[in-house]
Image 1 (cartoon, rainbow, N blue to C red):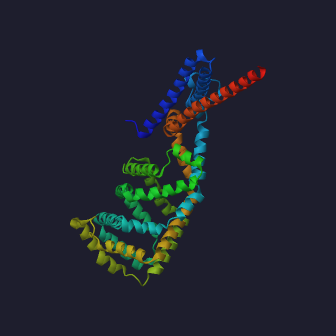
Image 2: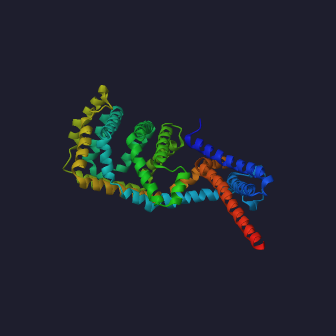
Image 3: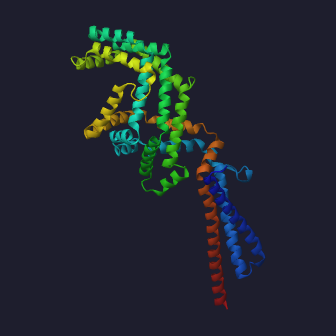
Length: 437
């Protein structure tokens, strides 16, 4: 079934074809009577319209291939998209990377929003608090139901209380990583997170936030310039369309990540394995982790009793998970209370929202500066997957209707010029004959 855009394009194409055929018919009909004034002006209008329409039909058709399927000389500029495929892709990549999604543009769009306020709005207005609580409850329930709490308590208590200054946190993290990989808990964690993120991505609130950000970026890029608005319109770049495609792409990507044979998931697993190896062999990484550990230990000394914390909480967590309430709101009340406390603090402390905003943006800016080239690479990789036929199809789909208007304009402008030239010629001949007489 054809889309509304395709129907409109076909309608305009029919009009262009009808006008051209009408010009030819009029030209043939008026030819025997061109010695008369009416016949002459009709013949001039129709012949000029036919020439203009044919010229623009040739030009539009030459974009996509060979008009009349004749192999025209190269200097006539046919088969333009196929011959300039690489240049077209490079220009599109440049437009996206250096104009639409340039670093200053991205920073400007981010600066228009307080991320802390956006997060608070999601938590309070879009049922986000419950969603976050549910995710944490399920994650805690899954971990607590599968972990060996006795061994965990023993390891934590012995190391943290008796050998805090000698703990090699990098070794512990490496051990946990190896244990997780060995028992395939990394697969379960990825599947769990993918499922929860799919729910979040499919939500109406995510769609609306993405739509607002994309709309703001598009308006900034257009900056009131008609050329850029036409490019966005021809390319189908609208906030609802892009946000829908983004939502669909993220959902598809996360669904693919649920497949154990997905290349990205395999790559993620390999990265985790490599990181675990680095924890054993990279002295600089180990030194950074140990320095962070000592800073944390010094801050916590005198404020926490590990043995009491473990004995009072771990077993209750296990019982909650074993009771079948794992994943339900309230299975781990402390999680619910902590989430509620965090939301209350965000509501009552505007400076906290500013700190959240500053922290996230600082990280985002650094990440964008470091990874910005991947935008162009991503666009280029995607466009490079298109064959010539698919690329032409995409251009026709988004710009075909406007190109048909070029044909209509060529026919109408040709008709107008034909009428003007005929009238000027007729007036000159009349004046000449009058003066001669």
